[in-house]
Image: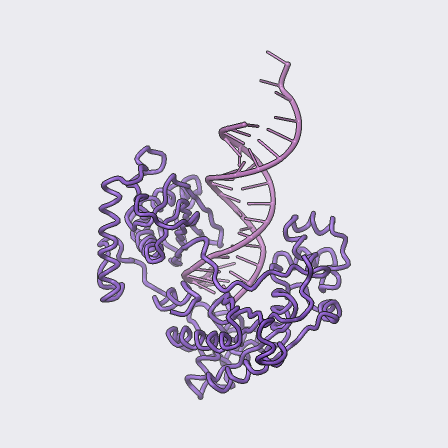
Length: 418
DNA sequence: TCTGGGGTCCTAGGACCC
DNA sequence: TCTGGGGTCCTAGGACCC
């Protein structure tokens, strides 16, 4: 495939998004070190980042690093709305907008330059409009591929624009730390550092058999291609999810049958409702159990037909959790997760299955499966009118204290505007 | 006083089929 | 007289991303 010759891919990335929104909503927070979140930092302002505070950090650690840090509440609805508005601005310049999270998107402006000027000019206009019309800082990278544009936007932060023209690609990349590359996280970075590879230039110079041994075939291939010939992944405006899941951190709790049933019921309810909303079912159910020390185990099962009813998913998840807990020698757990994959469109004839694992009851179209599905549809309809708290299975009421508001879960569920 | 919730992709081994 | 190779699906774990 011939490489793209022009740098027409933009990566637009809102700076410290949640924190910037909070500073926009409350001017007294501007220029102040703030963190969004409570037990854990969801986002930190640049003023807080200067102290080393970062997303994912435990709250107590953040306070340690930055004594003046202010924790502020999450205006989750506003995050969604403002994020949507920024994407709308992007869509004014091209229909080829691939939103990859609430606060960032790729654009392909190859077909827009007649109308709106060069890619860099388009990037400048987008940045200006987002600042003026919405009030938020956004950084933009411009390059020939998505991967490069993304690196460029990271280099552009905060509140900047970086264009990498095709003739300057290698020169641009060489001095940058390997950690800026997609797919290089802490583990890979440490492994590379262990053999003296720190910059992308170091990586490009390393013999590929060495990288393959160290990182595996796929990772080595991907990283190698970045430094040499580029993989021009298309900007895709819509992609379907491959799995749907939910999790709940519990603190340290005894894994009692009551806790398992209540928590898994709550999680299964969230997951199954989203599947039904999307008109999908999934054949593979996975449960994850986490213990103290962040160690976790998973158990999964693949069924002959897909699931999307709350009760069936709850039963399966409970069985799988039991299997995961067996032989672990742990009575205390810190997190439960339920996920459904192997998704497919629901066809009316493929109603599931009241079942247990390993028994022979998973026949499509069974009467119990159909009635469960009907019950769920009624619940869905009531919730659509009166809100999700209006009705639910009695055992599904989540017993744990909810440390994370519903709104945050909903925010994380979808990236498309609603 | 060990950390949230939503995802994707890769690897390795085993079962099974031809 | 137990032997080759390739493909697909499944499971469990891990790394990574926002």
